[in-house]
Image (cartoon, rainbow, N blue to C red; front, side):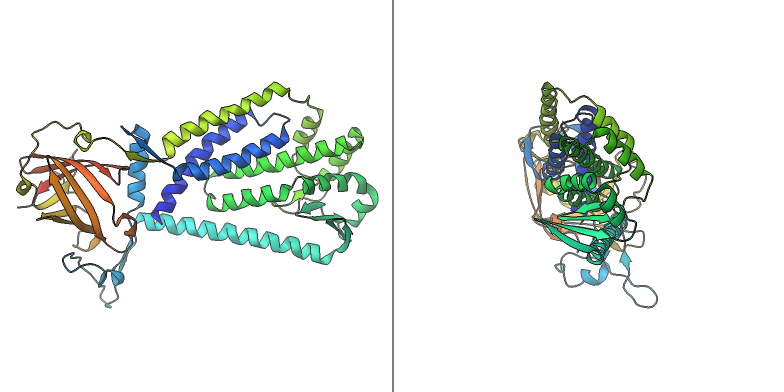
Amino acid sequence: MGELLAYNLKISVCITLFYLLYKLLFSKNTFYRINRMTLLAIYLIVLAVPLINISVDQPMAIHKVLGNYEQVLHVPSVNTEQAEGTVPADFEFRVFADQSGIKMVNLSWVGILLFIYSIGVIIFSAKLIYSIACIFSLIRKGKKTRLGNITLVVHDSNIASFSWLNYIVISKDDYNEHMNAILTHEMAHIVHRHSFDLIISEVFAIFQWFNPVVWLMRKEFQDIHEFEADSYVLDSGIDAKQYQLLLIKKAAGVERFNSITNSFNHSTLKKRIAMMLKEKSRPWARLKYIAILPLAAISVILFARTEISMNHNEISDIKVNKISMKDSIEGKWKQIDPENPDVDIEYPNIKTISEGTFSWTRSDKDGTALTGASGTYTYKDGVYTETINYTMPGMDAFKGKQAVYNVTIKGDKLIIDGFLDKQYPVYEEWVRVK
């Protein structure tokens, strides 16, 4: 689940950049169809970019920052009941219990983030399901008439006219007084399949509910839909002034029914009338949309999964006396803070390196194991390579991964500098436990 948080983090940063580009260059154009396609393309790009793998010779600063965040987000919470019987005998973890004898669970801050994120997803998913249920309930209660592939639903109650998929819902008063303009407007939403845009934006917002940009993008979709429908109405021959007066009249009436429907009396009245009066964008303005391509390329470079293709001997810039004796790295080591080596880390890592194998654990102040892993290693010409074979429960994402480090020793201090899984930069200092 930590991978999901890291993935969402990259999407959040990436979509913010694309949204800023859209607002700066595209949002005021009258190319409504192109703007819709651009917003949909942004969704696809930001979903795909973090999944792309690229090889680089030297990681950029942002790669190291994002790599560190990803590595931290992979640290799991541990259920000690699951720990027993799932780890090899030579991989020791201390299990503890409270006074009642019930096994305790160490809930890490990553687990708390996942819990909060999951609650948000559940709430917004329930909201979407409830909204769709309300729409079909309203459709079921109205008087229905077939108009080709479209179903017209007329209600006696005073509701805001709206369209959803192939349904047009309208009040009896609007049907009798303004049928032509309103039906033409809602027909435009159906013809252009605007409901699918709103569904996509809603689903995307569910999984990025914490990011205000996705809600702003949803609003952009709603505005574009109304601009496109208004243009459709005016092109059909309906008088512009009469139509605008009708919009003003309906804007003072009932509120829009639902955020995932296309409603006639949409709230952005001032913007709609301004766009109707605005001069059409010149054809050359379409060239501005090319700007999305270099931003997409930059996003791939910055936010794609990076793999380090450098030679192992070039992993680190540390140029201190490299050792060649395997025996020098074997033993028990405790991780220290490079900036404060004399201050004990509250929850230190303990690494044990023996003949061809290694293990490490992180324990709390009571000696209770919080997390850990073990596996095999090779060591040659100062390059230390670990292969993780066993992990604590919840760390399955690291199982089978390989870490390649440049190793140096200064007295009783072990320094490792390299990458985990060719992606996550690691720099650690350890002191020998005598």
